[in-house]
Image (cartoon, rainbow, N blue to C red; front, side, top):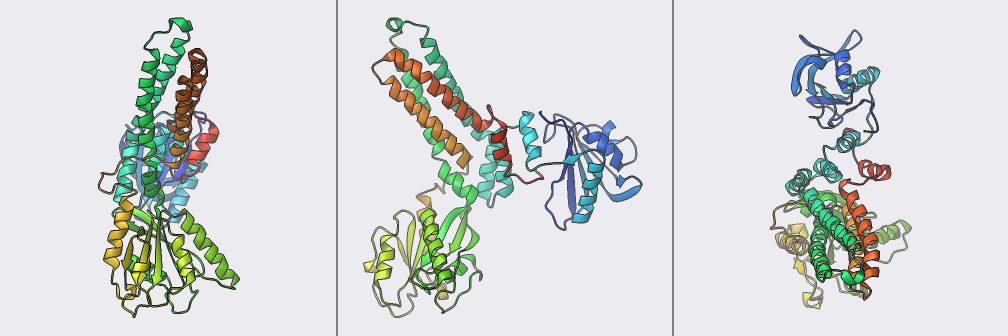
Length: 458
């Protein structure tokens, strides 16, 4: 530990509740509890680990509340330090007064993620497990919660460790060959090195292949609803949600900006985005909304494009169809209950299409099934949830993959001795990158990057 101070923070959500918890962690946690917690019998610092006691939380001679004091002794605590948790009645005013009493007794305010940062620095968890804690806090579905819990238990860390150990053994093997003159190298050395690389490369690919699922589980699949004004985008959004969220009007251009809402499909979190209608307009604000619509479509994971079957097919609609991407787009032919002005055969064959009458809730089930099928081409919805990499992991793994491929190219060159000399720095660089994933190697900037996304109570 680089910081031996004692920190404190409210670790429960703000607002009214049955209980609020103030956590104190550090070398003075128990002495601070002795100052502000009065109970019958022994003081908190004289009690065994994993015990709790009922009493009064006080400051000087003033009773702040009645509650519980939970005692955790190092290293058997969340931070691997001495930890005290004071449970008081829920409510912002009470918890804040208890926290202020902790500060007055010698603690300082915890920074965002500092409890978990200390758990990492004290060796209780690695960085991958630390990130899983916030994934658990932010999980929106059973699937994302299960994946985060598996990561917290160390399943993903084991895969990174296996990959690291393989690279380390490869580097050691390469360095050992430098002790031999070129004409005395064992005949099998290069074949053994290639065999080891052939083991490492699939491990890298397997981890990288989990990124898309990780992105969806953590951030939610970005599902953009687009179409011309009055095609039925807002009606579609309301139908999927089961309640009115967007304003539905016969007046074109009602939706001027994007509307984002969360939605669960088969345990997969989604961000449904209702967008401004796509059309030519002189209205400056509406044009800004249309530009944002095009930007959202470009970065979307899934794209639901709504067309109105009851109006003639114009050139603008044809142009929009040309921009739809196969593999992530669905054409929704809406207002099928009204007289048709064109036929669905005119639509591109490589884009799945669904006929709907959204104002009557017709075609919604077929649309959801089509959405599931399209999503299953990106994720294996039948597979059990499992730990998956994050964007930070993906960036590091791509760097590692690049270094490994560099080693492969060098070993395939004609000059064996020069190849070995040049390959070793690449492997060392790969090991440095990979060590940053789990925290085998870290620097303050890396820790700041990871823990800046945490809430103060974690």
